[in-house]
Image (cartoon, rainbow, N blue to C red):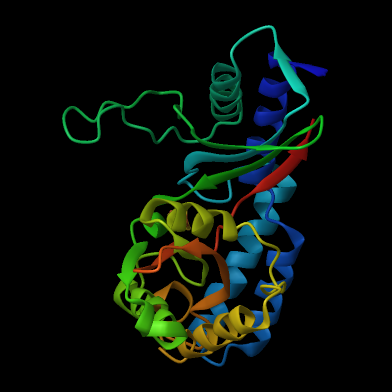
Length: 281
Ligand code: SF4
């Protein structure tokens, strides 16, 4: 067994949330530059220029990309040969989030009770943590500060198996059409197909972190990604919802086996501030 102590975990989580909130990945920056060339509307072009400029300033000055610094979401791949020592795994993660948001001047956006009181916890915790066990002696972290303007536009459809690929593409396009300007377009869409209602949304959220330009390895799913993206970018919503060709930058579909009687489809919507960072201990 390889020992990893909770201080290392806390420090890694803190480092990754600071990085994710300040620095947009190069693949997304490159896609935004391409989108600027593809966009034909002058107001759409000007919005894309502002987004690119904003991301460059945030990175060089190490300030938040957006005022909504998100709910802290983590996907953790825990090696089964790792022994966590000197404390509690979940507490260490939450402490890392708390220190990142306090020391990095990032907005704390979590309320304790979603209905009554809605009192800010003032630490941006608890984080949303998904842990999967894998072979090996390492821990891989994917952190995602998730803004809620876009999260609020997410949708789940319990489609019928007979709806097929066409039904899935239509559901994804319709979700974006209904969202209009609300999710701060241009968006990145994570789509989860199969599993259960809950699992479909989890893989949809994880799919947002896929590198832009990489399609599903299954060519039929890759074709659905391309078809959905083309149809969405014909809706005319455009950057910031002010009209134009570029409403969505990428559609990333992942899938799982499911029950004979169903076909869950989850669309997790992410804004242009698609922030995530990865690290390994
Ligand atoms: S949806 Fe994204 S870009 Fe819009 S306010 Fe929230 S985090 Fe910022």
